Length: 273
Length: 338
Image (cartoon, rainbow over all chains, first blue to last red; front, side, top):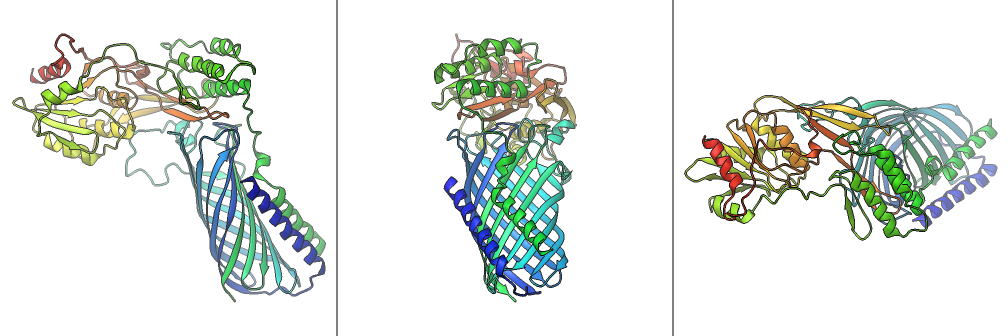
C-alpha cells in the first residue's frame, strides 16, 4: 500500500513538473467559458489516527469515484460528488482491519478576482451539503464503528492557467469555515462527547426526538478541514486530478482525531462545451 | 503579478505533494515491553470508570508501581501479558479484559461465587409443552397449565427483541394472573433488547438511577446522565412479574434488572447477579492485543452500584437433593398465587 502512495506522489510530481515546464513557455489565451459534465475514477490512499484510543496510525488504499458538472463563464458554479472506499491497517500489528467509506456531495460558487490573458484567480464558497464518513474496525465490539455526518461550509480559491494549446491547469485550495456535524466518537466510546458531558445519555431513544439532536456547530478552530487539488486538463475530454485532504477534530483536549486522504483520478468529460 | 500567482500555484502544489496528513499525527507507538505496559496503563488510568467504587478497593498507585516493576524489555511476551493480566484482574470488572494473539484472555472478574441455579432440562421437561411459542430467536413462552400464569424464558440478549415481539408475547399472556420472566443464565447482549423488554412492564416514566461516564483523562472527568424507564406505546403488562435470576445474570441482563427494579409489580427471585453494569469500550494495543474496559458505571435509584451484583427480593437456590425440581420457579408461582 505504501507503493501506491509513492506512485501517487510520483505522478503528482510529474504533474507539477509538466506544469512548471509548460508554464515557462505558454502564452495561449485561456477560454472564458465552458460547461462540462464529468466522471472520474482513480485510487486513493487514506490515513487515520484517533489518539483517544491509540496513537497507532492506520493507512491503506482503495478506490475513488467522482462525478459532477461545472459551468465556467465569468463565474464558476458546479456540483461535485465523490465516493471512496479504503481498507486501512496499522503497521505495528495485523489486527483490526478497518473499512472506510466516505461520501461527499457539494456545490460551489466562485467569482473571478483577477482575469488575465492566460490565467485567472477565483475566490468563492463551497458547501458540502452532505459529507458522510464511516469506519468499521474488524475485531472490535462497542468501538468498532466511527461515523461522521456533516455539512461543511468552506472558502475556496482556484488558480487557473492555460499551459499550452492542449494543457490547462487548475489548482485549488479549500479551507473549512464552519460545519454542522455529528461525530460518534467520545472519550470513551461511540456516543457523541457533547451528549455525555451534558448528561443526556439515555437507553431509550424516542422516535420523536429531533432529527439533528446530536449535531453541533463547529468553527474552523474546533474542526480543521483543508483540501488542495491539482487538475491538469488535456484537450476537452481528459483531466488528471490529484487531491489531498486533511481533517482534524478534537472533542477532548489534547486527544485529536486526524484523518486524511490523497487521491489520484482520471476524469473523462462526458460533455464539454 | 504573474510570478506571484506562479508562486502561489507552486506553494499549493507543494502542499499537495508533501502535505501528508501524517505531519499532524502523533508518532506511532513503540511495541517493546515497557511501551506496551505504559500504553495499557494509560488506557486503564484514563478510561476505567470504577476506581471510585469502594467495594472494588483498588489502590491505583500501588497497582501501577507493583506491576511496572515487573516489566522491562528483557522479559518474554508471555510474562508481559501476565503482568497486564494482573492489572486487569485487579479491576474486578467483568467487562474489563485483555486478549493476546493466541486468544488467551485475562478477565477482570470471574464469577465463582454462588452455585448453579439453572437446570435447562428441568425447565424444558416440567414447564414447557408442545404448546409453547417462540418470538424471535430468544423469547420462548407459554401459559402454565391449570394455574394460568405466563412463563417467558430469555437466555440471551444477543439477538434483537423489539416492541412488536413483546407485543405479540404479552398479547398472548394478557389474561394471565402474572408472569414469570426467567433470565437465569443470561449473560447479556444488546441493552436495546433488555430495555425494550423492560418498558412493557410500566405505565409511567420511572427514574431508575444514573450512569457515570468517563468523559476525559482525569479521575473526576465523569459526567452524570439520569436514566429513566419510559413506558411502551405497545402492549403493557402491569400485573405481578416475577423475575428469576442467578449468578450468571450479567451486563444487559443487569440493565434489565436495574430498569425493572423500581416497579412495584416486580419481584426478583433466585440468587445474586454478577453485575457488569458499565458500558465497555474496546481497542487494540500497539502490539495487537485486544483490550476492553468499562467506561461507565450504573448506580441505581437507591444508590447501589450494580457492578457488584444485585440481591434478589426472595433468595432461593435449587435444592441438589431434588434435581428434578426447580425450586426457584415453584417459589415464583407460589408468590403469584398468594
